Figure 1 (cartoon, each protein chain N blue to C red):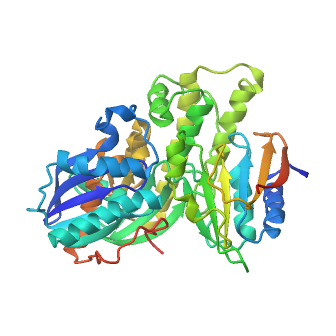
Figure 2: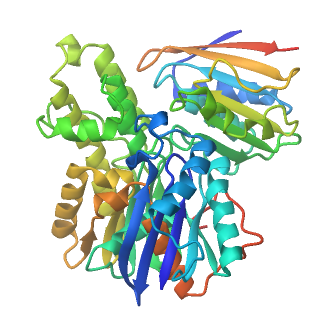
Figure 3: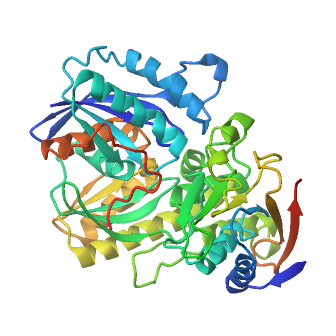
Length: 340
Length: 146
């Protein structure tokens, strides 16, 4: 089955073609607008939150991806229906509806978060169910128990800021240029993670929720007070390493705690922050040590950040289960939920 | 009016008091530095308005809509302009659907200079002084543009 994926939930416009051969996935093509200088006049790679950008980028991307104008060879269309920004989501949703109608092909409205979980299916071996997924991005930080394709239970979530946002704001407080996350990741490689004992919020709580706004405040206080006890600021590499250590520590510890309770066959890492080197390594090590027999799946970086291949992947499994959406009634849903 | 807060709890109480005065149609602008307590303030408002979900930071999502359980306010639209740097971005959000709507309260963190607000919309500006471990001082001013 060949599925066309379309993603326009927030900043990024993305299209992809993915083949699903009885559960084995192959990415035929995957394009993301911020990585392609389609409109040089807009300049820069700082993504913009503008529906106009999606309108301008979507059809050129479909052309660039070589999508046949008559939809030949495509068995289904998968589009992100939510969550996200309505004006942005609508561009992809309405285009997908129109294509589904014109090509007389079935349509699947996909949850953006579900798409992120499926990024694990582009690597082999694919995860065995049930899976416990840590989904970490700029906008989301959640632990999700995936019992089977399409069956999810929310285990825990952030109560305030997402981990990706914590990285971005810490970066800003440290005077680093956009994007903060990758910059901190890079600087941290040369830093001492135990230089500053930043707090690990909610580390000991019995639930599987997270909180990162207190950590943001700790970095702000540290910078404002000129270091601990006014001793002076540590090297930026050390501050980055220590901050990152606090975030990774909390994420990994609570994921292992949740896995110990839920007993999955596999642990998945997903979302844009899954690109973080330290998190990828540390989670793998922790799973190997604390959960013998449980596999750990870390996605390829290209599929961790927002993309349409993951949407096509999720859509292909829904299509396999004949879980289609009516193209006449599909609507963008800014609050689309993954699970009750 | 100014109010002092020494804790998250007190910040939420100040926000709840403000929420008690709202009828729907208002725009609340929140000014304060990183970590001042803007999202915490919104959480206090949404809890007071009987929202069905927890108010989380909209920095990356840009707009969160929470359903309220209140006689006249049906939803609270929580905006965050932290990531938006260009005027086009602001005008592409479809805010005209929400601003001034009688059954909606709109709250904006990091508000820009101009929002497409219908004239006569009650605007409440909340300015938060202080960050980190300092006490916070909330200044609440009501403005209505005619």
